[in-house]
Image (cartoon, rainbow, N blue to C red; front, side, top):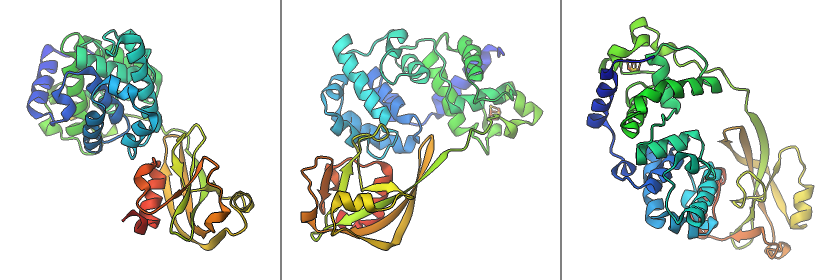
Length: 350
Ligand code: SF4
């Protein structure tokens, strides 16, 4: 659908007046904009703000990021989740340094060949930094555009995304970065999922669903297949010095991050005993349960306390370490393990 020219000017004028102050909106540096866009995927703006500031202070350029060890990059990402984003971004920074002399490619096609850059990141960084005519279609834009057009097709379909990108093209011929950010900001502040503030909406006169009274029925998103739920037992194995055993993961998910030993709930503890020795004593009472959601599955973690004599554990065996009091900051934990540490090992955190 083509709206009159006033649609775009109404939207952009509103954005210029009402946009939230964000540190990445005060720069035109494509690297910094890229950092913010990677962090903002799946994470709330308010959470990202502090992470962004710390990250930029430590890694102010692509080169600084490329030269840093992965362990340190993950440490600066700790708590944001979705660690593959950080790993891919780190790899992409190395590609930029080795193939493009440390300058973020200005050509969208080249930019998209970098590790972890999908259609959304390509459009966001290239439009905001260089005004390339590429529309960004994220959750906010899906909602705003489906409502403006009173469109009830399933937004989970790839064909809907393609169509929206196509329909938005005329609006990004000029000022694409501002238009894209204005659409996303409208979705975040006014055209919200449950209580849209239509009476304050700068494009209300262009909105079909407002006119037809169907705003709250849109967008339509068909339910995905149910997430897989995995139940694990996690063991806080403490030695006589008050240190806990931790292991480094060697799996695709959360690779190289540290965790307390865990086994699937229906496995028995024989494997743990053979791994950690005969003095391992596991409490029969569960200390608590922590749940963690990933995009594709849920972990339900039953936490048990346990004790062991330190001479029974061979920590030369590299993926295993003792986590002593005040040593938490040496290790990168996934969010679920941080929660367990904070909840059940609090006295060690002092
Ligand atoms: Fe969204 Fe309401 Fe504005 Fe339409 S009028 S775009 S539904 S906030």
